[in-house]
Length: 352
Image (cartoon, rainbow, N blue to C red; front, side):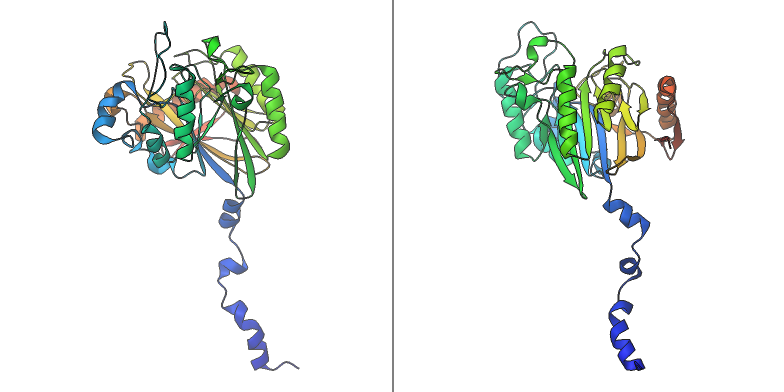
């Protein structure tokens, strides 16, 4: 028979352990098996914002949102134009964008991990500016996707592994000018060719748990997605993507839950160097997922009306937040997406 002294000798190590060690909480277990992303729309830290970055530095545009941006495991945006001092300006193009290379450090300090370069401005100053952009992003541990020295490199995914979950990011452009697209031996952005997208998503899905695709598409200032956006968004999910992130319209478009995936047709603007009176509201999309499915999706409404916020997006509260979420609910109704207003944010009601 074991005496009390012997019994205590064997039990003591277990008695000294905390309850959390013996019985891990659901919250802790869930956190270890999920990944969170924050996705925002168009970022262009040039143009009219230069007056403020010259005075306050390149962290200025993100000061009001950086705590939210840094909460996520992965933070994403569309980088609208090169960050470079090199290159020749595209002749005959009405709007051309370029940003000081110091902007890369500002993006990194704000928490950005991956940016899409697949858009209609990344080649505004030619291949040299594109190459310098990729270089500056890399030096700041930011992955650039959707553009490169040739077609193959423009279609290469950015890869992450977090909490045992493997994630691949891809990006494509559907916008003019056509000569900005990469070819077999020509630099540029990844073209939105369905055959390429299908092949790339299926290939990425073979080695990764979650595939996230960024599309630069649609029409500027249009709150409804075009028919091809809906078709391509559905196709991307059917081919294996879990999340589709859209941008280019500069304004919000609806959210759709489709076949266990989520499509945000347009995230709108984020930090963008324009005083446009037509662009007032934006969103920060927060999504949590595991290897199998999306577990949570929320929208943080923001003001991007630069006449008021002076190129520093701000999270909205109260009636202003509710107004934006109600607008998003309205433009998402056609997709039968339910969004509830909770704590100044929009909770996307996932389908069971």
